Figure 1 (cartoon, protein in one colour):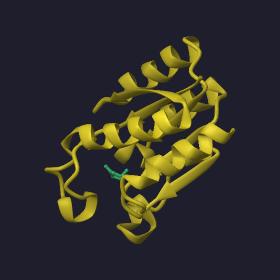
Figure 2: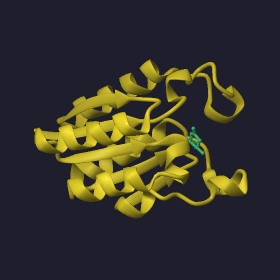
Figure 3: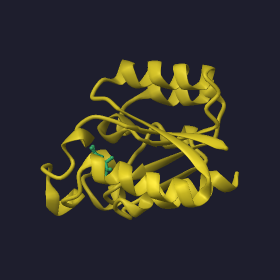
Figure 4: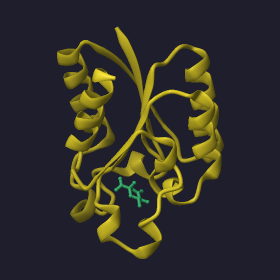
Length: 143
Ligand code: DQA
């Protein structure tokens, strides 16, 4: 069974309460359940990690890579726009990763238009809400 990790970055633990007009009213637990349900249909094993700390996300990428994970779905949230460390961590893992953004980052403030971490990913899905993670899982399951 293919093993995929879903990594969520800062403030995504506040989903449901955080700017619902942009991110919707679903919680992180709702998002994880949606992904779990799809993983079951696809026959993929999923593991979840959320942190508000850049270094914790870097450490988790290393740990999962060493433990034999086969791909990543990442939403590094605000760190997507700034973090060369997370870019390098994904590169060091050498595994397929798909970046997801719930909102459409290209249609928001200029400082969100660039993603440092997307360049270390095989694809980026932006602006599809929670279903963007499901799309990412389907794509990774095929790789
Ligand atoms: C986000 C978009 C980022 O710009 C923002 O900092 C987030 C969430 C999204 O999923 O739409 O925290 O990654």
